[in-house]
Structure formats: structure tokens, C-alpha cells
Image (cartoon, rainbow over the protein chains, first blue to last red):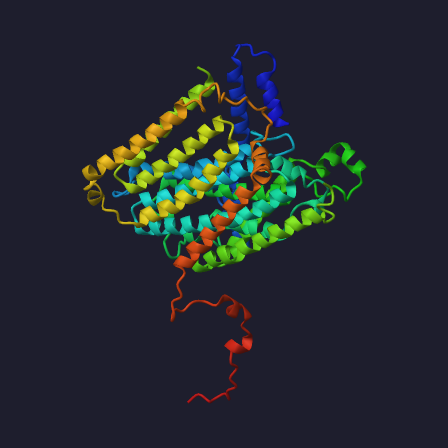
Length: 372
Length: 201
């Protein structure tokens, strides 16, 4: 749609200035990156707003309601913009004993993987920046680099609380990556592919065909591990504001601090999109198979009820709401309990369910695995 | 020079520079981070060889897990660099010998009759949609299934052995028994006491 429009704008009409072909290709890719990242950044900004509003309502408060546009309050919709501007103009403080270079690189290392992973996320059957064959593996590999941002930040600050936080987060992320990886093994067994687009295509056929049902334990484990991987409540011991002040970003101020925040929220959105792609059929419509085929051919209503980007957005928003809901509801896990949950509960559970999935595939259990 | 060659030389230069960094920087944490950089650039070079599965796995396993634990340990250790550098001249001949041997072996592999360009021509380019992962999987699970399974069993054995070696039962330590906590009933924790109301004196 939009991407194709831009593509035709750049590639078509013979280029009056006669740019070489490689430059055209580069420009098209650059335009696609902008088309993905600008809405993502807007989503990140308004996710912070949504978080404060949702948690506010859950705790019978109002949340931010002052900053609006054009002199109107507008339920505080201008708050994220105001926050961003404030952080941009704040002073960047370098602690005296810090490793200066690593201290400044750390937020960049946290941010880069959170954005790079979006390169292979499909938004529709044809809408993907890079249709890599092993895209699921790529996402796993790229997101596993993100932990270095936290570790390096904790170490380079040369301060005790950030260091404790770095240690905690390193151990936690490595532990939950295993559970997450095993949960994904179940998905790729069921789909028979490690390409995200093919995984969604394998879930064709309506709400009951999606992988959330045959892979229910893996689905739950994947999302909980995802919450742990992004260091969000109730697994936010790396931040732990009541014990280690704010963990790895105690010493950060201004824009580097903001970049850590952007990375965290971009990662939240990434985990939510992945969960909807892998277990909730991505852009597929839940009404397929429930409504007669002819309904999807009605001009406007049909495309709304049929598969499309809007379903992916809706599913992602559901997971994001879960994130906020968790944060408003659960008390923080104690550290040894986190480790116990990861190693002694999730990993054995995933191994057992991988076995069950294998048996289901071999026996061709209907309605999910009966077609070869 | 083609675009691919330019990319190859850029990444190779970074790789060599990072490798030199690993062994020359004074700070062990910096050395570990240089090693991470080595792995990432190596993975980029493997991508150029169309070995995308291995490239991604290298990042996933070595960068995402092994080096994180490595950093974890290195950060915790209090390494005295001055003391480590003391024996430099003593170890130099041995190090030079090992390095020389390695270079000789590499030279021999690259220059003998079996691996020269006539016997081992560069493989043909695969089509853009060829799945490296699928090909690797097919080979591993058909032709090489026994070596693969044996390697898996050995690794499992190593895991079990490592856990048993470090496992020790300490008596007298207090820890949570989660299942007991979950199974607890109200009567075990709450005692209702009937008390007569008393008059304030």
C-alpha cells in the first residue's frame, strides 16, 4: 500500500535526474525504513502516555491531563512531546569515574537492536522490509545483543547500584532467553518454517486455527519471558527503584536516559508484535472461517473484516495493554523467585510441550495438524 | 572492485583491528567487548559467504549467551593487570611458537594440492531463495544423523556432569519451599481466638 506507493514514486517515471540504479534501490530502502520507524517512534511516545493513563485509571487517578495542543488541554495528549523536549534540553552529566566512551555508547547499543529487529517484521503478506529466510532466528539473535546496553551501562557508570543492576539483568536475560527460544522451537515445528511470513501463513483459517490454542503453554511462556526480557514489571529487578534506585540508568540524565527509555518501549512493542505474529495469526482476520466467504468481498466492510494490517495493530495493542496491566497489578518478583520460575518451571514445561507438539504433528491431530 | 569486495575488506579490517584489540587493551572488560565485536564482524563475513544460518547462530550463541556470561565473570573478578603482565618475557617464546605453528598450519592448508583453486573451486552462487537453513538441516538429519545425535548426547552428558560437579548439599541452610507455601491452608496460618470483651479500666 503505502510502501508500494513510495516505491513506485522513486522507481517509476524514469527519474528526471538520472540517478544510478544502486542509489534508487538505496533510496527506496531508506524510504521504507522511514515508513516503519516514524510510526514506531510515535507509538513509543504515546505508549508512555498510555502507560501513565492506563495505570492512572487502574489506580483511580487521572494521569497526565495538563499538556495539550493549541492551548487546549486535550486529556494531556501533548505530554509525551513535552517530555521528549524536556529530556533533549537537559544536561548530559558524565560521572567523574565513568568510562566515558562506553558510558555514551551503552544507550546506543541498547537502542540499535531494538530498531534493527524491525527490518524483518512482516506487516502483511507482502509488506516486509527484508524477507530474510531465517527471519525468526534473526530477530532472536539481534534482540539478544540488546542486553549489552544494560551491562555496559551498569559497568561503565562505575557506581555500585548500576553494577548490581547489570549483574541482575545479565543473569535474568540469559535465563529467560532459553525459555523463550524453546517456546519458539514449538512455533517453528508447528509452522514448519523459520520465516515470520510463512509462520503467519501457516495459521490460515480463522481464530481456532491460530497457534495460541495448540501451543497454549508455549504462548503463555513466550509472553511472560518476553516481559522478563524487556525488564518490565513484575520482572523489573534490573530497575528496582525501591532497592537499587533505578538500576543501570541511575547515573544517566537527559538524552542518553531518554534513549534507554525509547529502547525499552520499542522492545515492548517488538515483543507484542512478535507474540501476535507467532501465536495470534498476525494480520489474519479472526472472522475467517466464521463468516461466509462472500462477506469479505463487500467493498469497504469486507476489507475491514478480512485480513489486514489493522488486525495486527489490534492484536499488538492487546499485548501492550497486558504489559501495562501487569505493571499496575503485580508486585515485583524477588530475584531468586525469578530464577526459579525461569529455570525450574518454564524450561521443563517448554521441553514437555515441544514433545507434545511433535506427537501432535506426527499423529496429525485435527484441526491444526491434519493437513500435511 | 565490486561492492561485495568493498564490504568484505571493511569488515575484515574491523575484525583484525578488534582481534588486535582483544589482546592488547589493558582492561579485561574492554578486551571482552572487543571479542564481541570480533564475533559480530565474523558473522557479517559469514553472511557474505551465504552461510546465513551459521552467521545468525554465531551472534545468537556467542554474542547473546556465551559472551554475556563471560562479561559477567570478568566484571566480577578483580584482575591485577600489573601482576598479569609480569611474566610477559617468560611466556613470549612459547607464545611465538604457538603463533608460528598456527600460521604454518594455515599456510599449509591454503597452499597444498587438495585445497587449491583447481581442486576446490569457489562454489557456485545459490539462487536468492535458496534456504541455507533447510539445506543444513537436511544434511544434519539425514547424512550425518548419527554424528549429530552422538554430539548431542555428549553435550547433554557435559551439562549433567557440570551440574553434578558443582552441586553440593549444604545442611542447615534455610530456603523457601514453594510447593509447601502454595499448598498452605488458612487453618495452618490463622488462629481464631475467642476473647471476652473487657471493660476499660
